[in-house]
Length: 176
Image (cartoon, rainbow, N blue to C red; front, side, top):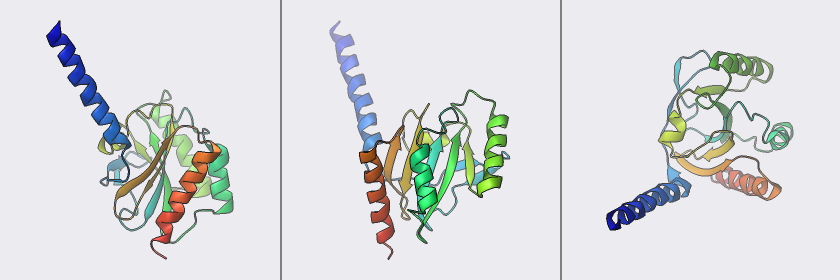
């Protein structure tokens, strides 16, 4: 019985350590292999050239932060020569067939010219220790130096939107 309690304590400490590590920011991350919408191997664009605004989206909740994303796009609020934005579709957690998800994403890129890539097997979440991103619209900021500086999973309230914008502004001001 005592051995079981000790093992459970160590397991809890280990899991808490992983969770705490996953939340500590900023932290270095590496360029991750992903796929194009056509299934070809690719790397994250603009890596270490610009700050990156990354939307990591579960296709089941594509509109989770729709109003805020529309605000960013329509006002060009984050437009800067120092930042590029793109999307990564979380195919692993999608209930829909991957081919259908990619077809829909491809149609969207034809309309707005956005760059959309795919993560077929949690390559990004595992490499960057993001934890569970199922049913989440994840917004991330990665600095030109390869530091993950901001992560938010799920719906953003107004206070969180302001924190995000402040962090994005800070990152862009480093190069002005």
